[in-house]
Length: 192
Image 1 (tube, rainbow, N blue to C red):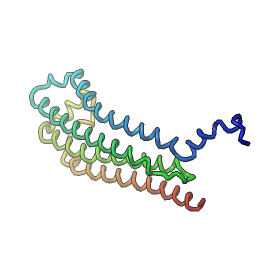
Image 2: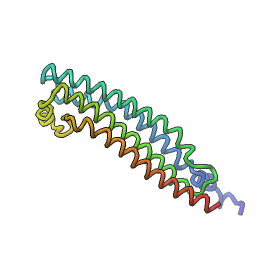
Image 3: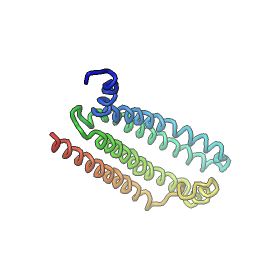
Image 4: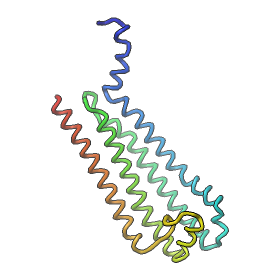
C-alpha cells in the first residue's frame, strides 16, 4: 500500500525506530543540565545572602567565599561532563540497531554517575577540608542555624571518605550502564 493515507506516519515511525527519537531529547537534556550546573553557584549565593550568612563574621565569610570558589569549580567540571557527553549520545546506538532506547538510557545513567561521583568525591572532600580547617567545631552550630544540618560540617574522616564514595558511585553507575549496553548489544547481535 503506497497510499499516503496509510503511510503518512512512516517518517515519524522511522525517526523513532532509528533511535533519533531517543538521542535528540537526551542531547537537549544533557545541554540543559550543563547550563543548570553553571547557574547553581549563583542560586547558592542568592540563598546565602537571603539567609543572612554574612552576619556571622569574618571567619564564616572567608570560609563561604572559599566554599563558593570550590562550588564554582565543581559547577564548571559538571558543565564540562554534561556538555562533553551530549555529543557522545549520538554514537551510543547505530542506525541499524533494533534496540535503541536501552543504550541511550544507559549512557544517561553513566553520565549521571560520573557527575554525581565527581560532585561527591571531589566536592565533598574539598568542602569538608575547608570547613574543618576554617570552622572546626563551629560548623555544626552554623549549619543548624542555617537549617543545613549535616550538609555543613567537616571532619577528617569525611575528607577521606568522600573520595571513596565518589569513586564507588562512578564505578557503580558505570557497571549498571555497561550491563544495560551489553544486554542491548547481545539483543542487537542476536537479531542480526
